[in-house]
Amino acid sequence: MDGQRAGDGLRGQFRLTIPKDEISWEDTAPIGDRPRLSKEERELILRLRGKVHQRVVSDFERGFAKGIDMQNAQQVRPLIERVAQEIMESEQISLPSKLREVLVQEVLDEIVGYGPLQAFLDDPTITEIMVNSADKIFYERKGRIYLSDQRFDNDEHVLRIIDKILSPLGRQVNERTPMMDARLPDGSRVNVIIPPLAIKGPCITIRKFSRKPLTIEKLIEFGSLTEPMAIFLQAAVRARLNIIVSGGTGSGKTTLLNVLSNFIPPWERIITVEDAAELQLQHENWVALEARPPNIEGQGAVPIRELVRNALRMRPDRIIVGECRGPEALDMIQAMNTGHDGSMSTLHSNSPRDTIYRLETMIMMAGMELPQKAIARQIASALHLIVHAARLSDGSRKVVNITEVQGLEGDTVLLQDIFVFEQKGVDEQGRVIGRHKSTGFRPLCAERIKVAGIDLPDDIFMFD
Image (tube, rainbow, N blue to C red):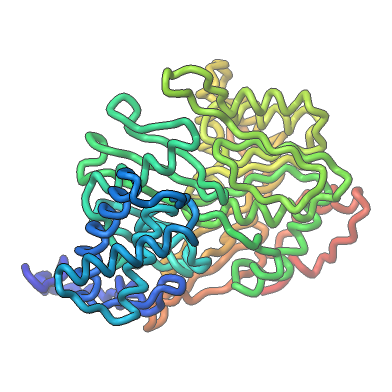
């Protein structure tokens, strides 16, 4: 089967037309200010990097680098340059200035940064970093996934960088605790998992913290939603409707939640509750709470559910739960039902209807043994809107549904789409062809928006 794609041998009566691959593993753009290297240049740098790093650390430990602060890049760089020159001379290797700078910088990254990850962290166009194994580092740029030529020396090298990430937080991974969530100093979210759970070696996944929060205008410019949709969402937030932002992994749920929070009036007190802090609210009257995992001894955990309950005692105007994953969904729904209107959260799901199913399941996890109809009634009375986002096949992220929760019929929560994204296919370059459109329904919540004193034009529900 070498050189064949799966299914190439199927040549019967029926023919399947498949669009060209949307994603190429090769990225022509450099990583930050680092030059692109040929395969031979990369191999040479990898061979020298470990030797120079080991020698620099050895010199420091033996007292040959007195007066140098090993966490100060300006002080360490001359030492690295000297050691690199000595090793190249001893091995009779001559490097052009470009490669010499790459070598010095990568050794510097090992000492004062996060090793092979540092270049990706420094590049603002990269949004996610995925270490599948020591020799496989993938990254996401503009919604597309690429395989890097950068790599770690071995599994021990990956574990050393993991320890560098976790140690300042007082955490560690081992056989007893083989997976862990953490956060970098810049706010980027990190997940690590090691053998025996990770079969091919230690894995690291980093979702970078955006240095410049997006605005609703930018989302319109990117085609994530339209101006009528944005106007409706702004009115919904100002009128204190309860909103769930749903979608799959990497669909932009947190980004949407950040943008929606910008519509909250500045005098309102917001309490955010998150498992791992990601929200970047541009709001003065904001208190951020973050759940705490157990320590090395397995003690001291403060789960997100306890924080939601505590938030209710903090005189909030609005409560925002970064992501509902379990029984805290019950506390969130109850908060929405007890005077904390305008609350918001995110949730992993495949569709607005699936969002309701997921909420029902998570509420059952709270152990209250509520009947199905009681759970459905709680959701129907608490929730007003579901904003569903998706990451499409071309890497673009769009709001694909804005759906109103319209009440209860029997045990079923009634839903009605207000705006949808209609996908018609993909073009020859793999780009999604489609458009946002209104369904023509005027939502029931429009009356509530009107009562709040907000003039919402009816024609936004009629665009096609």
